[in-house]
Length: 497
Image 1 (tube, one colour):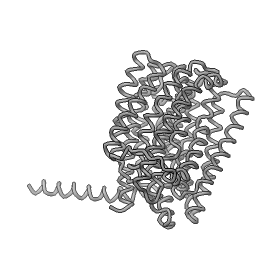
Image 2: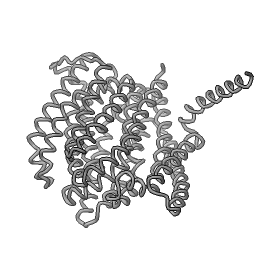
Image 3: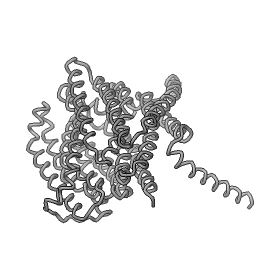
Image 4: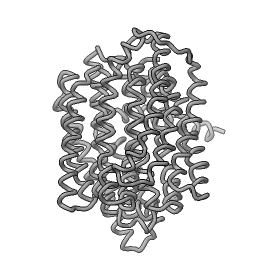
């Protein structure tokens, strides 16, 4: 099987996971929003943010280094296992000890036992590192997706919702994560059967640490950038306001983050394999960029128009004040994923210095802007507006880096963005006309959201299959023609009978 065929096959499995989560996440979110309070969600947002910081440190870029390394040996795998387990244990112990300090800094003493609960998850997560990396490197996404989807259904749908119904509050979400990690570990390990023998030879860690150390620094910068709003809102506005903001943010950005992961974890190993073939790398990057741009700008337009129904149905009337937050964040949707594609290109080419500089500048820009928002006494909507502007600037910076890596393609990159924006405007106009009519007709929010999802899916499918030429058309149209020919032949045989 060629690399392109393997990549396409991997993307199919990756998107199967994405669409499964896309269908299930709103259902679980709607139930949780009625079982937990804004205060519970605020505590969980703080706990999850602190957990994610430790997780980035514990991973130390080991998984990324195993995927990117050109020639991987058994000793590299053993070094990866040893490093991930030791880091998981160390960060778990450190987080447990520092939890009271974090509670004091955030002015939220209630988060201390929650932080310690999350700290116990570091060791579970470290068990997944090597198996997940080996599967990604081989573009074997079927067991990865089985582990993720199965773990999500079991952890969130059974244990998470069950614990919330029993009154565990924010801890129910930690319980769901623990079950997810355990299920994923069993599935991914059975698919790889890698050795758990440890090694302590210094030279075994050099190749991984050289790349992994810089990758870990980037991950930490990305984490702080992604969670800075959470920390500041939790400290200055309280957990109830943070819970409102967090639910609005998750309603928009959780599916997009899932989409970003679905794309980047496939593109990273694919780009790594052709990192020395510039023409192939350029074609792969530009074709992927165009498809993602069309998809995301169209989705952003749909979310902006349908924000009212998204909040009322998924979160409930008590979260109605999150509607303007969701509308602002709709403009943020395309930028993290489009930035990720360029960032993965830099990572696959082992050019991490540019990523470090961009993430550091992005973090400083966010810190300055958020601090100004707090000092001026503006509300949380201003935090969302800052994210949109800063996200667009970061996306532009990464596009310049990608242009240098692929040796040109500036006009093609600009055309991809302009095409995506044009498609988004077209989808938005049609959606707005249809939704405005339905609202004036008095359609209930639940029924209207169903109509919006159906119309949005049809418009997006139409834009991708009938709109500007793109890779989806090249992949799907031959399949549709073959299927249509088969149906015609079958119909002809039936007529002859």
